[in-house]
Length: 124
Image (cartoon, rainbow, N blue to C red; front, side, top):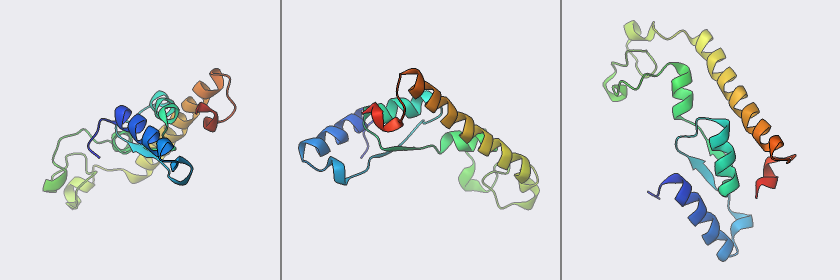
């Protein structure tokens, strides 16, 4: 929609509630979801789930060289060049991404538990 994430979630959530459609529409947020806190914040604001792209790219080893579309990614993450792809150790990156995701979700659940809640759905 082109609205900053936090304001966008609040606006869309309230519009859907006002139109009586909230129970029929899921809100998926994406944008700078990098920690358990950002997940909890966005769920509390009305999102039903969070998509994390940038954080996963960092876990893969992305250094934001801004060369994604040039086939010259220095870390091998976004290239088809076999020379550059050698820099990407897939088995170790697989573990890094899985560990990052698991720890991020664990942190979000710890925050939710610290709030005295048993389930993320109770944030609403």
